[in-house]
Length: 168
Image 1 (tube, one colour):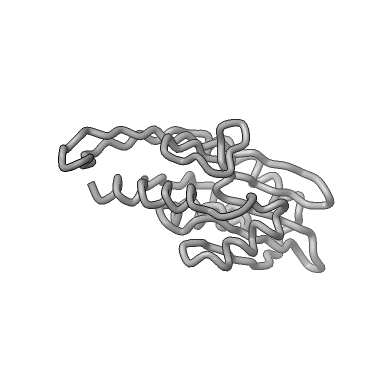
Image 2: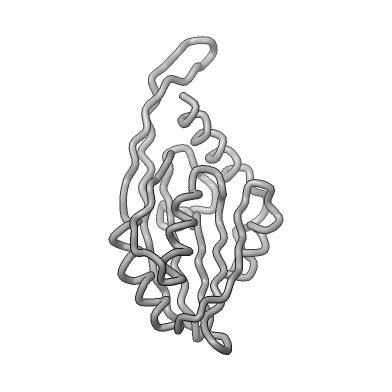
């Protein structure tokens, strides 16, 4: 029940965004920084941009192209009803403008904001070459995605190739 409520709250917050979705990765990162429920982290790793990109390409589709089914009871007008949600996730790795971006899209049955092809960009991981390594910026919602955010950071740092748990 608690998890189902958290999913509903997250979907509601996503649906209540004001204005157009962020136009690029810089705007997406800034939006996550200013959101009290957002997660935004930047760090530099000693790995090359090509190594970081390969980690995203190998682990993203393998670990993040998945669906999660949640069931619970919701109350509508004082009447309990069984509620079932299916959340589908899709990873996309894009190489352009001298960088690599891992986008994680979600299609949650109650989410209607910022849709593109039925999916909403939920997490953005942007990597750019800098002197001595790669700068990585991770942005997205903190609620229910902590393990995903941690796993993606581990991939970028070359520490792990584990698949995260979706806790919706």
